[in-house]
Amino acid sequence: MAENQKSSGTESATRVTSLLLLFISGKRAWGVSEISRELGLSKAVVHRMLQALTAQSFLTQNRGTREYTLGPAAAAFGAAGMRSSDLRRVARPVLERLHAATNETVTLSSLVGEQRVYLDQIESLREIKMAVELGRLFPLNAGSSGRVILAYLSEDRREHLLHTVLPRITSHTILDADALRADCERIREVGYAVSQGERQVGAGSVAAPIFDLDDEVVGSISICGPIDRLSVEVLESMSGVLLEHAHEISTELGYHPDDSSHAHPPAGRLP
Amino acid sequence: MAENQKSSGTESATRVTSLLLLFISGKRAWGVSEISRELGLSKAVVHRMLQALTAQSFLTQNRGTREYTLGPAAAAFGAAGMRSSDLRRVARPVLERLHAATNETVTLSSLVGEQRVYLDQIESLREIKMAVELGRLFPLNAGSSGRVILAYLSEDRREHLLHTVLPRITSHTILDADALRADCERIREVGYAVSQGERQVGAGSVAAPIFDLDDEVVGSISICGPIDRLSVEVLESMSGVLLEHAHEISTELGYHPDDSSHAHPPAGRLP
DNA sequence: CGGTACCGTTCCGCTCAGCGGAACTAAGAT
DNA sequence: ATCTTAGTTCCGCTGAGCGGAACGGTACCG
Image (cartoon, rainbow over all chains, first blue to last red; front, side, top):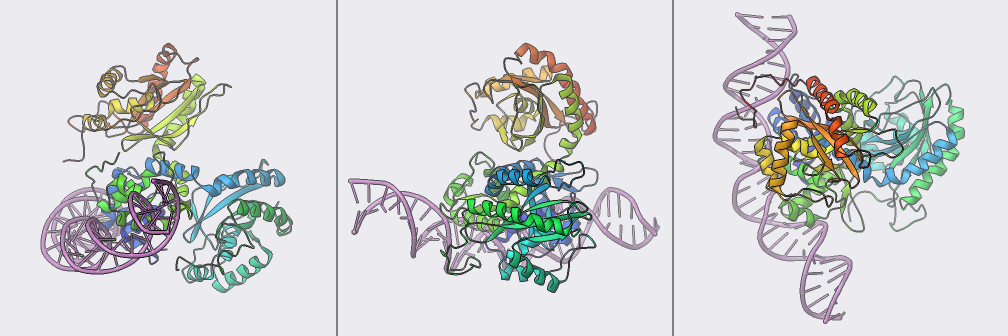
C-alpha cells in the first residue's frame, strides 16, 4: 500500500495527495510516525506537511492524542467534488430507475487510482437492507463492484495491481492472482460480476462496468443486499436489467463501443 | 484572493492546497494560465502540479477545453470529511433539539481559512422553508452565520480580512469595512448576529458563535428561514434559546469561558 | 491566409526550498 | 529508574523543481 507510482508532475504534490488519501482508507486518525512509516518518508517531512495542511484546515489535530483527522476544508472540498462529478450527476436518475425496478440497494462506484470509492447509493426500502459507506476507499480485488472494474482495466494496470500485495477484507476475499485473472476473464465474457461475502460478510451483489468516451472503465454500478435474499441465481437473473442501466450511463458519458477514434484500446498518455 | 499567508510547514504543500481550494471557490473549471495568474506562480509550476493531481484522480482534464475540474478522488473526501468532523458529530444532537424547539431550519457552519462552510443542517418541516447547500464556501461578511464568526475572530485576523476586497453576494451584502467593524462590536455586546437578505434574498437568520477549548471561534449555528416568517423581532426573540444551544456545543468541545490557562485572548502560535 | 494573441506544454541550467539525520523533550510502559 | 516510542526542532548539504524562454496548436481577427 506504500506504493508510489512513477508520478508525472512534481513529487511534492503527489506526496500531499497520498497523505490525504490515507485519511479515506478506513483509518480516520493518524499520527506523525504512523504516516512516516506508511509513506516511507522521514518524520520531519511528514510533520511539516501536516502542519501546512492543518494551517489550511484540510486536517485538524486532536490536542489530546496529537493525532490528525480530516478537517472542514476537506469536507468542503469533498462536497464540491461530489457536486462537480459528471459521473454522479449522470448516474443519479439511472440509479433511481434501477432502484425502482429492483427495490434493492443500488450503488455507484468510481475508480480512484488503484482503488474505488462509493460515490452514491439509493437504499432499498425493505426493512432488512444493505447500506454502504460513501467516500471510503476499497481495493479492487474484493467484491463485485471492484472486480468488475479490475476486469475491464487495461492489462498493464491490472497486472501491475495484481503484482502488489492484495488486502484481505473478509475470509471470502480472493487474494490469489491467478484466481483473480481467471475471474476477470469470465467477467469480461458475460459483462458483469457477481460476488458473495467478499467485502462484507452476509452480503451479495452483482455489478456492471461504466465506460467513458475514451472507452476506458471509470466506475461501476451494483445491486446489493443481504445474502439470503440475493442468492447467486437471483443476482444472475438481475444482470440483464443491470447491464442495460450501466450501458445507459456509459452512453451518456460519450461512450461509443463501435467508436474507432483510437486505433486500438489505448494505454496511457504516450503519443 | 491570491493571498498566501506566511505558512507554517512546507510551502509546496500549501501550494497544493491553495490550488485545490480554487476549485471550491465558485468556478468549476480552470486552465493553466488562469491558475498561474491567480496564484502568482509560473505556468510551468502550475502545469506540473496539475499533472500530478490529475494522475492521482484529484482532478480531471476536459479533453476538449483542456481545462481542469475536480475528479473522483475529490468526491471521495465529501462523505469522509463530513463523517470525521468532531464539530459536526458533537453539534448534531444539539441541532436536533434546537430544530424541535423552533421548527425552523437550523444550520451548522465551520470556519475554513477566511471563509466558512455549511457542515450540517436540519430543515424545517413547514412547507415554505429554507435549505442551504452543504459544503459550499461563503465569505464571512455576508449573512449572520458568517458575521458572527467574523465578530469573534482575533483582531489580527479580522482586520486582515477587512483589508481585502470583500465579495458582494446580494444587494444587501455589507461591504464597508467601518460598517462591518461597528456591527461586529454590536454583535460582541449581545452575543449573536441577525441578518436579512445579505447572503440570500428573502431569507432571514440569527446566528451564535461556537468556541473550542482554546477559546477561539471555530464556527456558528443559525436559525434561518423565509423573511416574512422571520422578522427582525422574531429573530431577536429566538436569540436566547439559540445562545443556550450554542453554548452547549462549545462546552462539549472543551470551552471554558472562565478558563485562564492562557493569560489573555490568545493570538497565534507564538510561545 | 498571414498576422496576432492567446493557449498548453517542454526544455534546461541554476539555486534555494526543504530533506533528513541527529538531538531533544514528553509521555507511557515495564 | 530505565526503556520505548511519540512529536518536534535544528541546521548544513544538495538535488528537486523553479522559471524564463522556446515551441506548437487553436481561434479570431482584418
